[in-house]
Image 1 (cartoon, helix red, strand yellow):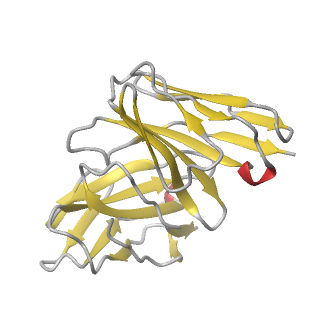
Image 2 (cartoon, rainbow over the protein chains, first blue to last red; image 1 turned 90 degrees about the vertical axis):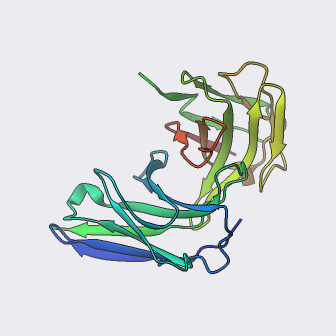
Length: 110
Length: 114
């Protein structure tokens, strides 16, 4: 499993774009990058997954540079309800031993 | 509705009293897993199962047992709970092929061992 490093916390205001960068210098060829969101006292929820370049869905965008040693989760125009912990995971999608780090606590203020 | 259910949601027990936390999914997922979450430590994997009768250890298996006799159920067993097993526990499931990272999580079980 590739080790990941992400900021412990980030603050933002409603309506702003939030970008969370995850470093994964030892990412392997078969590894994918996956992000989860967790609200207090709830289980994590899958947000987005990508391998290279850019992936976008109704919730977020994921930007992955050509060297794949980092990735950035972008949350457009956040609201108070986006306050949560965001986890970056990197690994082969056939892996079954998953590792969640401490994640990034994003706090959105009015 | 597709979901992962856990029972009980809250449990307070005493040291040494055997307990079982049940987990059930209705999505026909092959893969199921148990995690514990402690402040500042994120989620740590306890055990996982790739299919019926196939289980393996995660990062923190000590003090826990699991079984997978049916595809939909994956109970977590604490034979002799201790206070250091006080934690928030999550069960998760996913399809096996190519999407083990797209997991569906249950609502969590908050366990307190006194």
